[in-house]
Image (cartoon, rainbow, N blue to C red; front, side, top):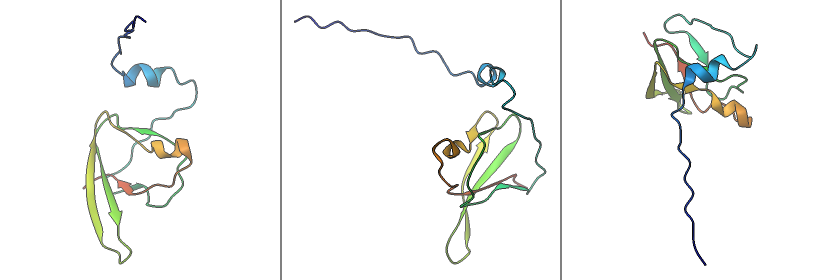
Length: 96
């Protein structure tokens, strides 16, 4: 038996191309600083792309303590859990 290797050239993901191919399923929104975009436990209905700025990702413990677990930057996506029906595991808001 002869094994043949098949390779596909993977192209780099281009968010601008991707976003330009969504017909009518997108809108551009600006969020003021410190505004919560969605909260931990909310059911999601949208995937977000950060065109400009930053988004702070935090979680809140059962006793109410908030911890920052990440900062998302220009070019990042978030909210993709809504594609599987998952609730948000964190709070996302514009940083100060």
